[in-house]
Structures are given as C-alpha cells and as structure tokens.
Image 1 (cartoon, rainbow, N blue to C red):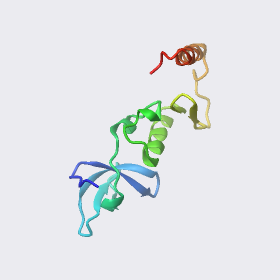
Image 2 (cartoon, rainbow, N blue to C red):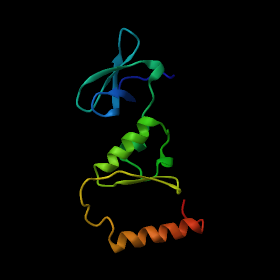
Image 3 (cartoon, one colour):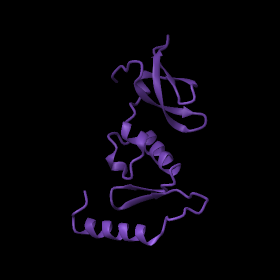
Image 4 (cartoon, one colour):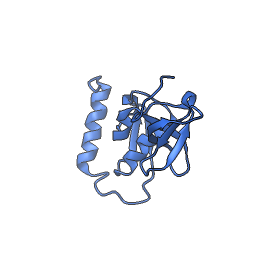
Length: 132
C-alpha cells in the first residue's frame, strides 16, 4: 500500500451512517493508521493496510460503473448513492446489467417520450456496435 499524504482521499469502510464513504486523510496517527475526516468533519482511523484510494469518478457519479478507475464496494455504493440523490435511479454495469434504486417517489419525466427515444436509440446503437 502506498503511503498517502494529507489531503489524499480514502474510503471509510465502517462509517456509522453511510457504510462506505470517502474521507480526506488528515494525518497518520500514533498507531500508524490514517486519521481520516469525512464530509461532516468527523474523524475516523483507517489502517494503512486496509486503506483504498478513492477514484474521483465515483465522487461525480457515473452512469456506467465500468467507467470507474477502481471498482470496489465503496466505489459502487457511493456512486449509486450520488446518483440516487440526483434522482438518477438507474446505473449500469456495462450493457447487460442495470442497478435500479427505488426512489419511493414519482420522478417527473423519468419515462417521457424523449427519454424512451434516447434509450431505444442507445440500445440500437449498442446492438450495432456503435456505442462505447
């Protein structure tokens, strides 16, 4: 495991609210573990041997998880969470797998004709090998 300096991003895998959430390395504690701060300013210790760097793509929320630079549990869960809070309830893993998260609400425009046409055209292009 590479040693990260202050400001590096790692996964907090035992966050009491989020489960997995990104945090910023503040320092290295006396035990040798990273002292990591979450977005609310709460501190956690992450052992260096368990520390996984955060890929910046999952902080943005990508529509296809294969676009992530590092595919792991934290990246998957956080990416889906980011998209969920933007009312983007569908996330793909390549073309054959789709993750859907129930929004427990009506999302206007989710199934309108424009969106349906977009996905029909995208599926047709994928079948023809034109989609990357």
